[in-house]
Length: 304
Image (cartoon, rainbow, N blue to C red; front, side):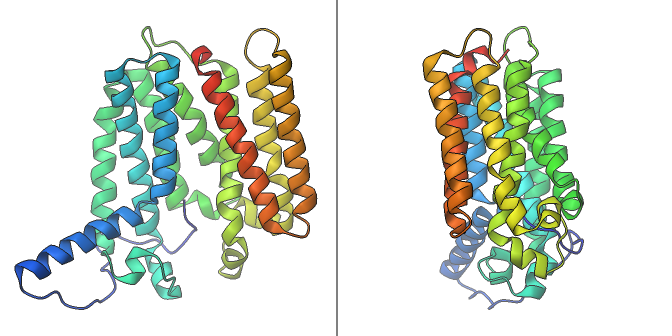
């Protein structure tokens, strides 16, 4: 997810570029460039990560091959729509700031094309989600709507954490409600998802927080400030580790306790080392988040 900007409109033209040669080769090259620009503009890293995690959770939870593919397709369409909405909405500010590396700023793709892709993938997400069941589809679409609300408005407010919490909590709920009988998800997996979402928000903002503050961005982590946000980052992640370890029925066992202790130690080391090296704090948070994802998948069979 990106940073707040001046509202853009679907009709906003992209930055001027070099005219394409009026040849078949030039047209093909132009099309390939636009496809590549769209691919980079959707924020492919988070799109792939969230879709892969949901697909793995669906398989572990007991969804069949066809239903797992349908669940994954709905999540992929939703994530694509969110990523493209983010870049299209932020385009005016990114162009004004000359933020190189952005496909719209570099002229690889036009803003109108990114908006069209965002709306098309959102339109595809609706039937795919509802095909998983009315309750399941409704929960997933609520998470996608929250992500769009973040892109369009909430990322510039103190409530910027809320769409992340809702969106990440919606994913395991979507998987559980897509199982036969549409069982409601266990409280602990939804809670852990929400905590992971808050941690993801802090981790997503931290690398660019100083540039964002200079540009007047005022989301929740920005109001905390870089130092406080960095110190807070491990808290929701370690709490998610505790919920995933202690939440399922029955005793956690020695292995679960050991994993929880390890997550706490890694997070603590990140806080201490992060006072001198910011990358150490971020690396520790990534390590704890990886532990959380592993715990999430191990616990996936008891999702409902």
